[in-house]
Image (cartoon, rainbow, N blue to C red):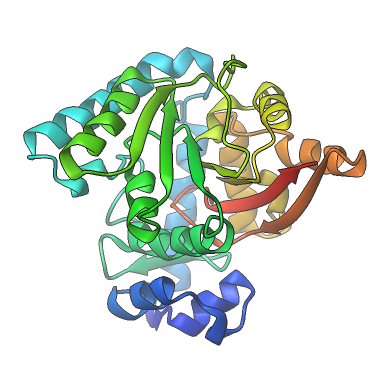
Length: 311
């Protein structure tokens, strides 16, 4: 039999590794007003979910990430741009298609069935707000690299209206969409082109700035050193990468093992965390925090993060 459960403000605080009274007010508001009720599946249903995950991984459906997908991402963000324009610049049209409603999700190294079709997005909102509050409250500017539709920048603008925001992406539709956001909603956001594989060294960053990537750097696979070198040279105040970090999975547990298999099948971010740890050992950066939220989509967890700063 399926068992109901819900995630309350105190549960989010535990996931974040803080006391409940330290939970930022914006996170508490999301956690108290949105629907986080789920069903824990029976063994039979759980087995069905895992079998479906295994069959998907073993099929030819998961495609490899990399530079060759530039055209695909241009098509995806172009579709978001058209939807945004045709929808009268409705901010809800910015939600990326890879956040799929109505699916089982991963929570605490298990699968759950949310009652709310938008559970993954709404859970993500709490995690995102926590990250913004923790690392961007004292910066003057923020740069999101691989900003996609700009929906994270909108959230950051709403949380910190005085921040100067920059959205960077290799997709023309993406940075055009960011510019359109500034015009249609009066936000302090500027869109710029940027290629993770070939960073523009002429692009300088505000020294009092924060840099963030959110489910974007995953696309470079093992080719992350050029971007890290760029950040080392530009020396922002803080860097936060919310990405799938395969090193954090416990592959002795089946749910984590399957996530790691999916991660490697797609060719997602590889060797990134060990590279940062090596730089920290050499005294070139300081790692401030490595955190796994134990939350993700059907196939993997894309919402873990590492926070660090160049020295």
